Length: 123
Image 1 (cartoon, helix red, strand yellow):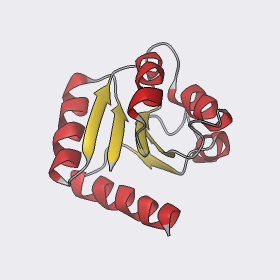
Image 2: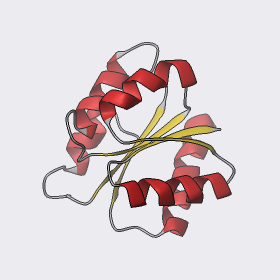
Image 3: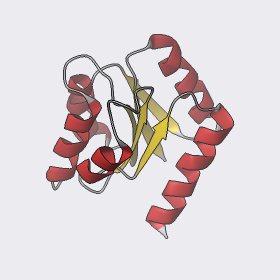
């Protein structure tokens, strides 16, 4: 399964790529929402894990845009944020996200949460 991670912190992006690759995902990593939009239609990830606090277009804007496009609206979208006071879970879910995860989170927990959402969405 192809998973895209959108994270502007290089160390977090590298860790996510290692963790999800180890779990058997084909991982694509990008640092901005704009770059993700360029890549999504040609690489067709089934899952996108997006940090909400990004330079330029933020994660909520990206999620809304993906959900409004018939080509991308079936992608499983999961948000990650270290700013729960800025991004409420309700707002993120309303934008079309399937799950909102608050940082910090362990690598074991995040992989379980991703697997749970995939199982729920594909069954």
